[in-house]
Every structure is written in C-alpha cells, then in structure tokens.
Amino acid sequence: MKRLIIHRKKKFASALMPYWIVTETDKKTFMEKYNLIGDFCKTSVLGHPISRIDFKILRKDFTIENGETIQIELNDNVTTAFAITMDGCLSNEIILSEGILLGDGIEVFNHLLTTRGGFFKPSYPWFEK
Image 1 (cartoon, helix red, strand yellow):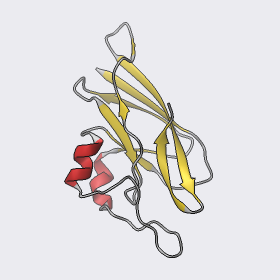
Image 2 (tube, helix red, strand yellow):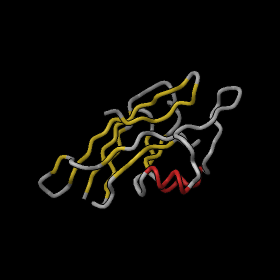
Image 3 (tube, rainbow, N blue to C red):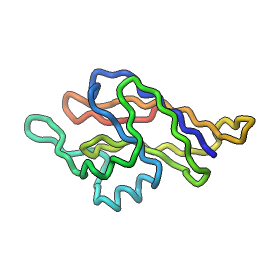
C-alpha cells in the first residue's frame, strides 16, 4: 500500500481555489481522454481562465485547499499523480516510486504543492522537487 502526503503552500494567487489530485490515471492518458492540449487554459481578454474541462469530472478526485495538508491511501498499482484546477490547468506529474517504507508495509511519499502563474497568465498547481 502507498500513502501520498501532499502539503499545499499558502499563496495569495488562487487562495480561494481548490486543486484536485488525480491518481487513477497518468497525466498523458487523462489529457488524451478529455482532449486537453498543453498544460494551461486559454484566457479571456480580461485575463480570466477559460474552462476547458467539465467540473463534474473532478468530483471523484481528492481536493486540497490553500495551506492544507492531505493524506491519500493508494493501491500499489498507482504510480503517478498530478493536480488540476477546476478550469483545467494541469500541474507537473509526480512519480510514486522509492518512497519511505514504514514497518507496516506502507510506502510513504511526501510532496509539496505550490501555485505558479498569476498576473499575466492563469495560476496553476506545481509540485516542487
């Protein structure tokens, strides 16, 4: 079994917007399934993101709020995770291999999620290395 612990840094950009953590598929397959080209949404003339994904698709995934830490229990067959905004801006993909092995057979992965962008382009989630 795997345990993914994600801490989202507190940032002003997207402070009120939750991010969704996707673990049931890899990023490439997700993008192909929902016809997403590139990681970012287009913006309106006012600079607001133009949604490119149906919000209902994200309901089954885990949400993380600004400054929050979440813990997700995963099956051993889950190998990647990434984050997405409600408009469809995507983060980089993290690989879940070589975590810290606990005595009870659980492999733990700790990751830090931040927000990039803002001002001239939509803000988006990003896993720091």
